[in-house]
Length: 247
Image 1 (tube, rainbow, N blue to C red):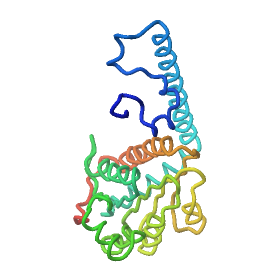
Image 2 (spheres, one colour; image 1 turned 180 degrees about the vertical axis):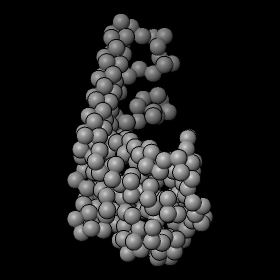
Image 3 (spheres, rainbow, N blue to C red; image 1 turned 30 degrees about the vertical axis):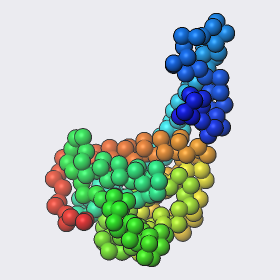
Image 4 (cartoon, helix red, strand yellow; image 1 turned 135 degrees about the vertical axis):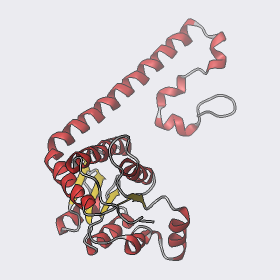
């Protein structure tokens, strides 16, 4: 991102200081050997940063695979049992986790292979989300939907990079009251979701031990796609009972 005169925007400088020396394309014709050297240094720094970040997410995914394999398999087995009995999946989260929640629902409802499974993202209906936020409070945007739609045997999957989102916490509490299977994905130390796990409100909690929102979300993407793969495998070739439309 740049200002009208072609210089990097101030916000960008704060995030990537090495871009201060970057020369933009329309200036290339006037480059001297010195500016060409600066360009090479910039490319080197960008490459170093990319390698570092890639290495971090690879390590995180490997760690999660080693530490969470047994629980992922157990969670997928319980999810498969719920689906096989006509259960439905409801996913939810805020911000970037909202789009991840939509992808969770899409992965199950419209898979690239295998049978479709009933799933709904609670972040998808803007009218419902804004009505509840405006008329009642943002902390109930997911729990109110689960109160209306959820039933015993369903699955609640909530995502939070901090683990502290009040509306995600309220949703899990509502889901537990309705005897839904509760599955949480969090980052850092797990935040309030760790407390819910210790209290038995959360049946399964997967925590990505990172302080970077980007790395957490990248690792969470791996987690829920693995859950989909394992759930599909646990269901086997048997046909899935037709469930009621969650909407």
